[in-house]
Image 1 (cartoon, rainbow, N blue to C red):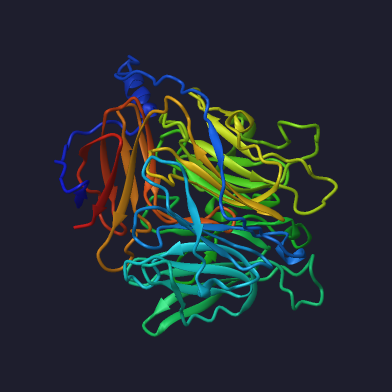
Image 2: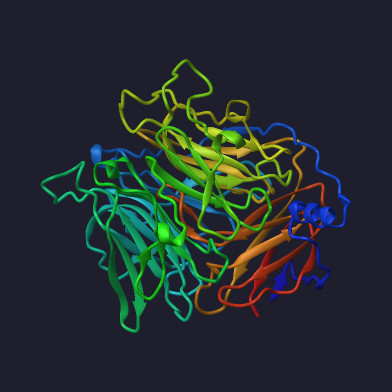
Length: 526
């Protein structure tokens, strides 16, 4: 592994620590003593964001655009400043090129290229599909989806992949073992050609696996109106399986949330595998190891409560904990509309850099559904020392009342603070700059492979801050029709140095190495 920062190299440190505070406590209990060698961090001050003026862009359209409204975050010209591509629905997408100076005020210009003249786009995901080191775009549409190859200067050309005429509302990608090309999964909503639609007409989903001559499609059926999907190595066995979150339509066809085992012939996990049936009006998926036990929690947005689930050991059993952890976010927390909320995109990130993950949830009524809140502010759930979460969206200044859809938490100006971008239905795109005072230290980590899978999708990063180990999987997918390609951000609290290692895709762990806080690292696989 090669570690680069401004032309110098860090040395490796091969010391070992327990994986988490839980591991420390367990070891102490065995010895009859409970001793923590490190102090707990102090709770950070409240987060603070300020709105940013950006070129106006609106996600609009009729009933086929009640869902969708995503954005992609990618550095499309190699200047290390993340750019924004926002879906437009009946409007064409828009590319906002990032002109911000490092540590300065956020600044964007409209730089939409001709290739993005694609009305009926629902969302967008960035990844390097053709392994040339340049980021490409998968554009989800009501109609044929489009793959765009990036040219390194925020221009794009259409790739020859015919995905068929669908209403696409979910996407994920991974590189399976032995393949130099990615496996692509497209999630489809209602089959518009079905005369029995729309409520009993959920379309099947499509898996595209690479062959020597290109990609071959496999139908993933039954489909239950997918609104989010994510390849993730939930079992830590080196294979990413496909999790799908589905909308309310499945209640008329005995549907449920789905997890596909990515075997030679994909199959659904069932009760015989330990899979428990989960039902909700699903919108988005996010995963993160919140309790530092080496297993990712799964967070699902929905109409009603937002469901946080903890994996039980190394099994397929997940325990619902939204009310125990304060993450249900089931009703508006400001205003006088007490009807149930509608959650869409979920994004994890440490907005205060205190070493505790937070969660942003984009909220908004589908259109005019009378049983759901119309004044439905976005949530910013701040992680607390006891493992619970506390609402701070209004305090932070991001409690927008627009009908929000896709979103991203990402450092847009290289100041070590996560900023926020949100696409709204029939209202302008919103961007907020994070100006949280007295924020903690941080680390930004970007991974690179030289040939296939240049962005190291499927890799794991572990950062040991002296208190516990933060683990992070590199994925493409999840959320609600929105994706981010770029460095992984770690809040470090007061830690001045940390240890870091990488589990490269289908390979072994690197050695631990010691790095200093408040820097952006670029790590290349040897």
